[in-house]
Amino acid sequence: MINLNPHIYRTGPNEEYELSDNDLKDTSKFRKQIEPWLTAVFQSEHLSLLLGNGFTCGVALAAGGRCTDMRKSEWGECEFKDKVDEYAAKSAKTCGRISANIEDQIRAAMQLQAGLAVMGDDRAEIWKNEIDTQLKRFMNSILDSERSIRDAEEEKRKKGEDLLVSFLLSFASRTATRERLNLFTTNYDRLIEYGCDLAGLHVVDRFIGALAPVFRATRLNIDIHYNPPGIRGEPRYLEGVIRLYKIHGSIDWRWENKELHRYTVPFGSAADHPDIPEKPSDSVMIYPNPAKDIETLNYPYAELFRDFAAAVCRPNSSLVTYGYGFGDDHVNRILKDMLTIPSTHLVIITWDKTNSQNEDDPSNGSRQRVINFCRETGKRAQISLLLGNHFGDLETLVRNYLPKPAIDQITIRKTKLEDQRGEGYRRAIGVDGDEQTN
Image (cartoon, rainbow, N blue to C red; front, side, top):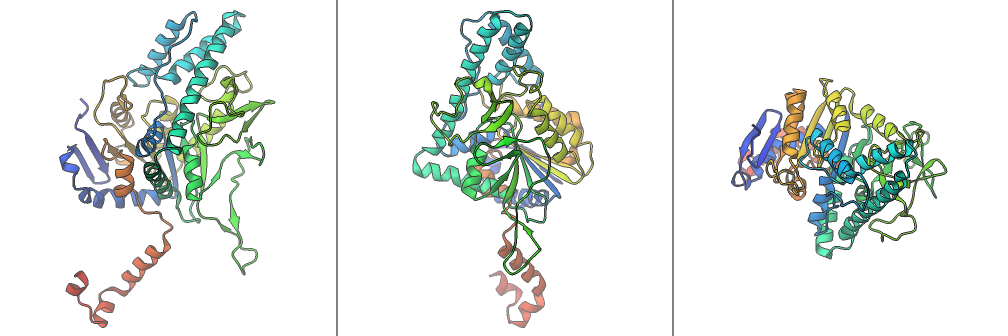
């Protein structure tokens, strides 16, 4: 049986499985154990971050906004809609989720529409129009969530933006001599891009071009360098650069002339923005997408998942997941492969008060899926856990447990000077241990 106590954490030799809300009133005790461990993890040779819908919900709640509506939709007057919902529910249970969501329904409907199209059935067009209608509603929900964050009351908006920036900088502020942070997300919104703009982070992805960026399959490891003043021929890596991969697509990606373009859709734009497609089946959302022709069935998803596997499935690699509920088998499969390499490490941070059986609960049994994943992999020493509404709360996590950005050179130099000077230096200037302590 899974432990139903609200909070669980395991970081290296420190672990607690019986923590109640009262136990966590004093966060300083747990900070001393968790923060140094995460700092060490963040200094891994290769660092990746996987963000799920819980990340957007965390920022939205902090800013007084609204989360994206992932609940099931009601189909219009379409034949076989009951069968579609049954298949979607079966698919969700296979992934360990209590109930189906809009993504499960869209995937099931796309498979039905593709089958009807193969048979030359006129109902294929009816289902295509219905899928467009539901995708349009879903896209409007995503844009509404973005607007609720952007247009929130000023005090709450600033709080949400501060948490967003602090969260991203904790991961992205690696020294330029280390490999860039690889940031993967299953979300369709642009909250990460919005946060990177606020933080001054430079985003490198597979899109090339200025006016209408085009997705390229080439993997050239393009990066950003600069020439220091007075030094010629010795370019250095620019700090504050991340690599971003939206492995399920994005609402501003569209197919045009057999090419994948990213359009300039402002964060939180109105639903009638000209670059929001009237027929969302032209966009790139919902993995996998059987509605595409055979040439684009696995594109760009195959390329993005190859990047995901290449980034995490290698020695000395660490991956942190936040807000990801382990409900996608195609993602979990790569995480299991990663853990077959002994020098890799996985940190799971998720908000889940209990093992909820409520279908409308946003956590929707994520704790059970996390525990099942850990049991199936059997790599206890390679997995750190921070589970529960305390550790998973974005504000608590940022303020208490995430490391300070690694490029804070002043703090680093101060620490080195203190270590070098030691007790002998303090005695030489007349400061004894007691006075130093006081």
